Length: 459
Ligand code: G6P
Image (cartoon, rainbow, N blue to C red; front, side, top):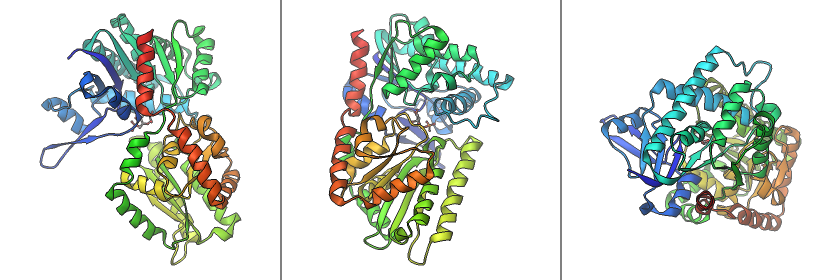
């Protein structure tokens, strides 16, 4: 298969589960990139190169099962784990989100160097697959921190291609990025600069990248840099959130909430260190403490979906979230009132149900490339929803005006913001929700994707 448009990412648009009867079950993923790609239509012959992530995926590759336009790479499991868990998620993600507890971590030792080798091999596997699938002069859109070296490697194999790379994360400022060993930091930046064009979600992340280049490799050279703030897919969300399964889940949630005039504060996240779920719960507890008038009158619906559980620090964080939710329920709960409803089983229909009935949405990440929950809630909200939003989320650049802004580390301040949001008059809440929805849908995924494709082709 030789294609004019290629996309590359670690996680692809489909994954396979191996059922007990030996059959493979396909699961389609959502997200901005999947809907973005739909803009060019199924007939465009685009190819999406992704990694086989689990046993089901690997079995699918072995059996030759697959979807048209999706090419899964069966990278040796050990190499994949070292690159994905060992470098992408425990080093690069930590650097860009500034998550290290620095007295102990990071320590870049010999073992790190072994993992770095694996990261190179993993990037090379992508570069080779892309080189093999690309028509002369094709446009290649490489995604995210997993694949920072692939642009440079691909450039060497195929100088004829137009290579783009897009970062869905923040980019670390030079002082923090500078934690990486100099040779590794330079190799990463040079790998990215192998692209003709680099995309970031906000101006702030793009500037950080340029500042790192300035300091470590003498600038960004001929590579262009663009900012594309991925927005919510309004048409899809509005239609999907009106389906029967969402209505069912709204009814169940209402039962769990109890009293009809109870207010709800919702959050929906992967159980992800950068999402700051623990401080969110501490803030909610502080609200109940400082404003006892809210006891029995508010419920916090927290959806924290499992993520990256191969990493011990994520497992510990997940345990801490559930311990703290229990603690709050024990301390404040009464017969007819559960202060925190924590759900950990991933269920998109239930997330939409929560979006629809929420009075307040809490989005308080320590640092976040964009944060699509902040953009999705106002689009589907039934009665208007106040948004408590971290100033460290990329989405804040676009939504800050109509949100209640918080410093994600300030638990007392976040509790105050929750009180303000819960007390907001209905008319003001509705008016702000309208402004939030307009800003959130300014750049729908289809447009986001086409803009990048056109910019790349125009070079
Ligand atoms: C972030 C990254 C994506 C990643 C997603 C889920 O949004 O930017 O590249 O796919 O998290 O994480 P996971 O490790 O499960 O793919």
